[in-house]
Length: 56
Image (cartoon, rainbow, N blue to C red; front, side, top):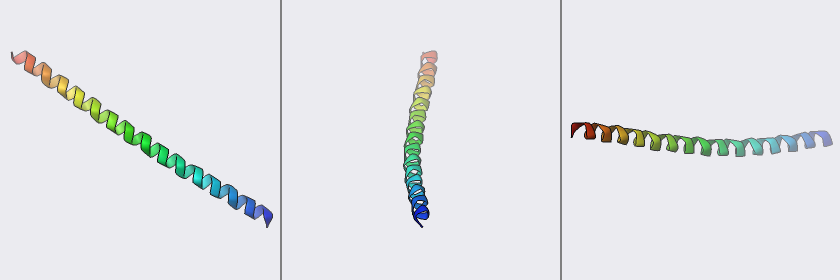
């Protein structure tokens, strides 16, 4: 019975750890998406500026 309780505790700890990892990974993914969006906007802005310079 004691061994089952220990295994249960281990599984609960593991589950908690994995939940925290899931949250941390989600935060990292969101940061990466936001960073990519900013970079794409900058790239588009540069292209637009280059085209304007070519016209004049």
